[in-house]
Length: 343
Image (cartoon, rainbow, N blue to C red; front, side):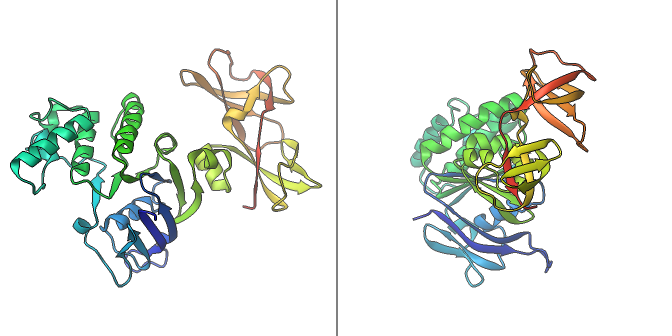
């Protein structure tokens, strides 16, 4: 049985004809980490708040451990849903110590709370920090305190709202792996919201890509990244180069040229999707291009290519060890591509 089940959930604000979330259906299994990913305003935070009980739905139903917690006729309060919540700003009490923050609200006796605190400090690698105050901690340490507090009551479900957004790039990388290990070690079913593709790809077992309140695609990070089913997903998650394509006799006709149709034809019109890492600049390449821009990014260089016949530029990632310069003429090959049917 799924720990979380959302069945055709719809939410409108202030009677708006356009729902913030529309016919949203997904199931999250025990111990699974689900990421809700999408641009600002796509409905992912509303979805998280509906699971938590901070918002009421207009249609559909939400189940936790097989029990209805939200429907048109049922509303179970937040504190009775078995939810642990990590907020975007961590929401730590500045006047309380780390230890006091973590066990805040626990109802056990003093000795039980002390034992539980030690368990949690060990879990999040903060032994010896219990007497410090939040302002004496780094961003990553504050995040771990917030996580420990959310886990203190052994919740059925852990919800995390943009958990890495307040961290710098290097710490963000470290905390993704650390948070994933902590959550997995507890076995708690987790839903996190993020607008950052790498957060979701690195941490999640499953992903929901959202756009304008609806699910664009659901699956594992690997499945979605390598097989986007819509133009939106290819552009948002994979950051693909998208070229209009027309199918003629199992051939894709595009502004870049003709390509064999991969797989079965689903529609006569669609898009040729080429990942940025699938364009290879090499002497024996099939296509000519002129370098329009080079943006150094450490281990790789983002290169923008102007190609005759294309209205826009192709973007690719090349090894930073290969020198390129603006206005240089190069040749390139397309290592792999996909066909996305329809608009």
